[in-house]
Image (cartoon, rainbow, N blue to C red):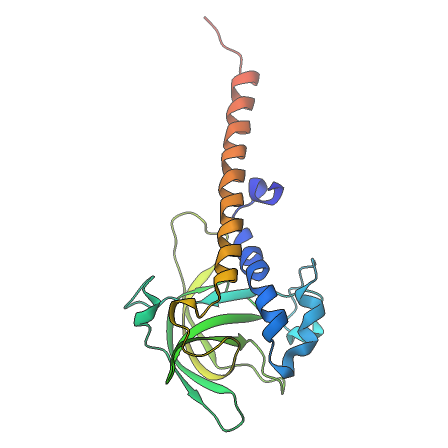
Amino acid sequence: MLHAQVEAGSLCPITMTFAATPLLLQMLPAPFQDWTTPLLSDRYDSHLLPGGQKRGLLIGMGMTEKQGGSDVMSNTTRAERLEDGSYRLVGHKWFFLVPQSDAHLVLAQTTGGLSCFFVPRFLPDGQRNAIRLERLKDKLGNRSNASCRSGVSGCHWLVVGAGRGRNSSDPEMGGMTRFDCALGSHAMMRRAFFAGDLSCTSTPCFW
């Protein structure tokens, strides 16, 4: 509540990380088990390092595409299963939220239907993942909350069951995101009230 009253824009990465953490704690791929401690941390770590070497992590999301918007069932990004069990994603995301995140949850089509993938910035061997940021969004308002257009073409790990369609990103995660959004809206109304109250009680009037 206090954070939202000071700077609402930076709440987006906090909200997405808060919502994604319960899911990831249950379903983190084996090469990323050392992410558990930094996922639960309340520290911000801006260093460009693999997640397991950081004091705190941010998780972003890449759900929507330009041809479908909020209709994620029309997504065209494809996921091809590789011999080692990982997946190669090929496609784009129209809103790639919080591009500075340590990992993103990304929707893509498999042979079984729409599925959600864990997309880390760094692969287990320390190499950068093949995520291409095309441009930052020039938004009206909310400029402190970066989002971008992106292309994805690399190896990623499946985190939730394939073919779950609209529920691919997990209903609990969606519910926790909406809970934080409701708190943020309440905080902005509270800030507006106090700003108005301060103006009315501290501004002298002359008749």
